[in-house]
Image 1 (cartoon, protein in one colour):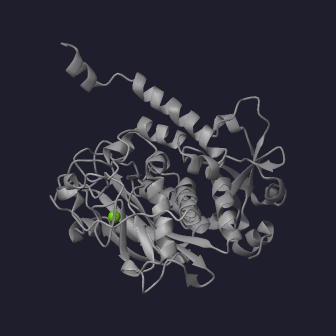
Image 2 (image 1 turned 90 degrees about the horizontal axis):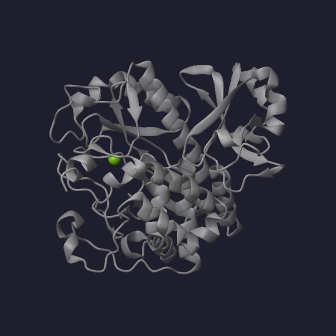
Image 3 (image 1 turned 30 degrees about the vertical axis):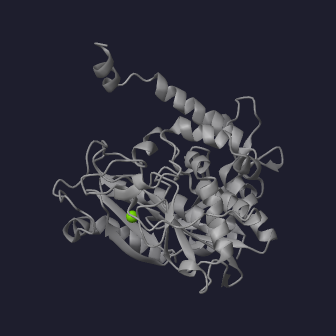
Length: 432
Ligand SMILES: [Mg+2]
């Protein structure tokens, strides 16, 4: 992998680099750097005032430097003279311990010490809506069960094909695109890969989808539940753990083709599920997607309890085939780096402590969930989830400095929400 960004720019005709890092709330921050300055910037990083982003810093803190990772370079398919670079946050000569990409890299290194590498694929659902955000963009998209609606999919062919062409040109190996279960909702899938690469691509995908939608006069949103009666935006993750070319979750003799180590990893994710919800379902709005009543289409497709099953989409974890599991908990607001970091932290804990996920449940949780008396319920709101994260020794130890900073910023967000007086509150309380 060539690392001389100036030489790459010369070779590929790149005029500008977009040096980008992701803050704790999942917002991408960037500086646009001309090629003539990339040599120094590649070594020392681009300077930012950390307090101006969501990174739990103060105005008195010194410069934060975003040091670009040359391996992450992506030329913008819709503006090829610009090269996007994922960057790592540094301050005072050290990586910032609670910056999301650094947190993930630390966990990847911990797995690497054991000779293990997590690979994941993510399914980032999104809506195409009107620029003002008030409604879906296609007034004719009205089916009661709109999933896989051929007509509605093809009315958005120009947008979807442009994004898919871009992924093909970038070598992501996209393999399918569909209209999802809500009116106005789509999903596009590309090949799974190592966790850091998937996290970088997940970040870039959100940026790309928004940019290409804007180009077409539309707006894309990954908001967990933008329309109360419609299915929300999930971000399902497909997970496996590898040693070289060998998938350690694969075992033809194991139940559903999953190895004992695979079940321990899965058991670790289940063990920490309520605390992980604070990371995977990070907004006030997230809790309208999980624990939800059926939508107009007939199902929310989101979990409400900490359970797992075979090829059954009514549980938090599904084992669709040997060698991997699908975690259906996260939503479109999840920070791409903290999503991977959370799965890996909980999974490694599961392996080290031989966590037992118990027997799988082969029932329709949406209909028969009430018959399961010992299933733990997922947190009912953001505060509930933040308290579970605060109480988690597993995540506290493995995610380190991330947890107190994250709890602080998200606690402030919860308080801002709680201070907000809603129309519902007035309607139901004025005459009490
Ligand atoms: Mg989907």
